[in-house]
Image (tube, rainbow, N blue to C red; front, top):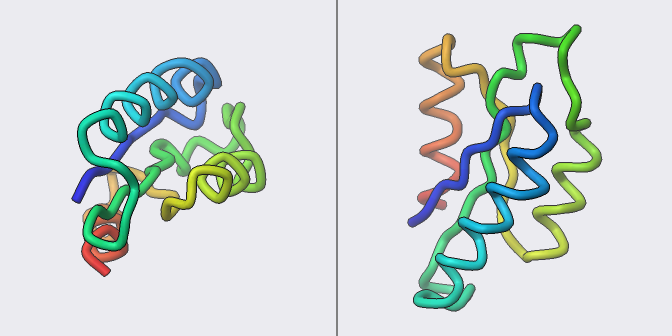
Length: 88
């Protein structure tokens, strides 16, 4: 199980950092039924500062055949939601 967390208020964290992490993970663990990767969009509570839309992040994840979930790390329930989605 892998979680790639990016900051929805900073677009470069999806365009650059998440790409780098995804490439590194899949280099050693190809996406398959036994490897779960979830893209986690953090800081979803900062609605006025969002630079990465839900649709953009979902598309990014779908293109790579991985899960996507949005959270606010300030909310414990959101963090549990991200973990639960990763283990399914």
